Image 1 (tube, rainbow, N blue to C red):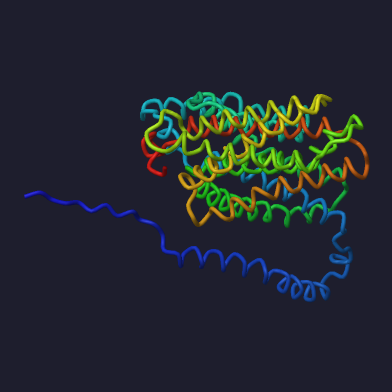
Image 2 (cartoon, rainbow, N blue to C red):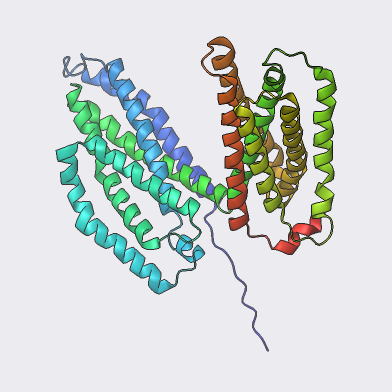
Length: 406
């Protein structure tokens, strides 16, 4: 007779989270009331102890530092939350995990202990910049490589953790003394550092829980934003580009050609994706983004032949007609319905912001020309092609599941 063992994933009750949050915020909110009562009592004992109020410049300094410290805490938390789970994700055995952790510990022992002395020599700010640089190196390494060197990542993160343990506190105290603030004001900054660090680490956990396995969302959002920006730039500049040489052109006859090219591009989608096909959606989008990027790059050189320009414009819109339904197909595959509308609308925000910046700089200040704007749009399309390449490399969905949507 077989025995069935049920697996139960233990997790703390939500009431514990609510209790801890409420207790922390009650302590913070009640602190001003208790401080007022304490100040009133102390005035009978020592009238000079509270004669000096907290300067506004110190509050600005404190808030600026806490903002930087919170961002550093988020960086530290994102890299240290999952630990062995990340090593297992890259296929490491337990022996390799132990070796990589030992490498990080040795680096902290031999190099990390001397970084504090180095900060006293070269300055605390430079060491804090080194902390950020180490995290950026590891993050970039993981984003471009499917199998990054775990040893190097462990060493870099261990050194960054060593810097985090002393660098920001020392930097704050040194700057505090340089600005001539009272020593007793450090007490509030110390407990606020611990409070903000914990809050930032909680935010890191929530952010990591949301991002784990959701890199596709960012790739698709960036590709959508780049496409929207390039299309907006095209509709702003296509007519001035054609009539730039002063010749008369019937734009009303060219406009239907552009939309017809987009319609033609959309009709190629079922040819690629209906039924069994060796072409993946990511491959098709990679080719379309590269082609449209090259088209805008050529247009950026401001060719004067109208027929050549119209041909390029039609090719661009044919690519757009192919890209739009293909991106919608990938969104159906990779993005939950609960996030679909928000992702599409939020991806429009950076595109609209850049378009507004371009309009201000070009139309009002006359700082940039049409060629620069076109080249910038082409660069965005090339980065979208890179996103499609990474999406193909990191995609977990089997190839045959892709065609079930056709």
